[in-house]
Length: 119
Image (cartoon, rainbow, N blue to C red; front, side, top):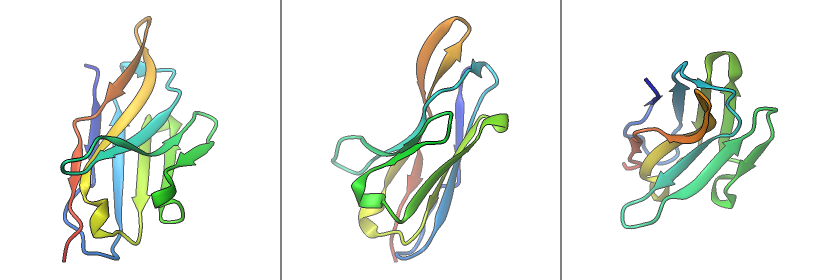
């Protein structure tokens, strides 16, 4: 089964921290880019951070210095460490992976995990 399993979301207070995880099923191989996107209420989905297979990272300006993306290639897992969270970071966070499923190169999305930032 081709899937991304996200975990770690939940209610957090402003200034708090949270770590999201996203594990890709074994059916997704030769994974290149892995990333996190988010969609806030009433807004379009936007990039949060990406990381390529060699480890180079890219961040949205709004999260630089507060969020850290990392990956464990042996576990086909990508993480997003979020620190100093703000109410405006409230969103559904989606994991995204580019890789092969059989002979097809696909972009696979997770189901999303809700992160409400509120006191």
